Length: 303
Image (cartoon, rainbow, N blue to C red):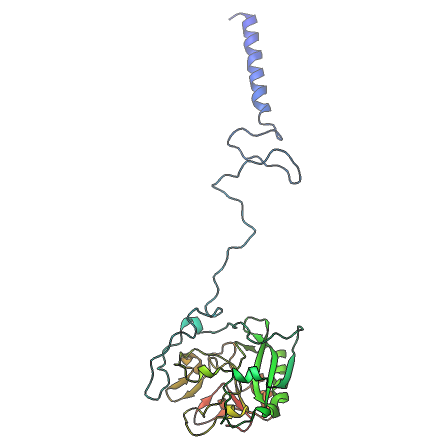
């Protein structure tokens, strides 16, 4: 090779090397297959998509399934139980969806304004009586009943509005008790008035209505009116605080809650704020009875 040819070949190699280096200079578009990042805030050509093998992390957390017991199951209240010889439902094991039971159902009462505890007491309106269990022959006169709307804390840790039909003579005392329970955030699932159709409905064993007035006999009796029929008793979170007598548990599917040693939200214990506040207004707790345990029940006369 001549000297002139050798010099030309050398210049060609240098030129080609320079061209290759300039194609990978920072700030220049990358060759095909490389990722191109555009600085934040700058405009220009859109970025090429990131390689599929390593997607950027998402800032939005993946949705999580609700914990068992925090959402009411779709079948709640729709599965009648086979009956025992005494007419109560035949109990089974407490369903997993109800143990622990920590949900609150939608309010049925007109909401109260504000953000803290509130209550309104008035004479029982005709439309309220119409959807209650009151009827001629009940042991309390309409004029002796009061309709109470009040705020309460749900198991969902939110403020709700519930309703009670009570004897007018104890309305103020009960409001003071619920004010204290609201302050302590004791949770409830549902505060509403028992409907007439519920008296004769086949038991499903999963009810949990906190309520006062129900015109019915004493449990296990057909001849004696319950204190509920006078508006002088109240049941709180019955599923978490069942009635227990021998092998009878009411509600029937609440057998897990007959174990009072395993504490769960909504359970009433002897040293709880619930027992203390009802005692303050002179009411006694069915959980202290000897022949049976009615953990949901409070009454003015102890029956």
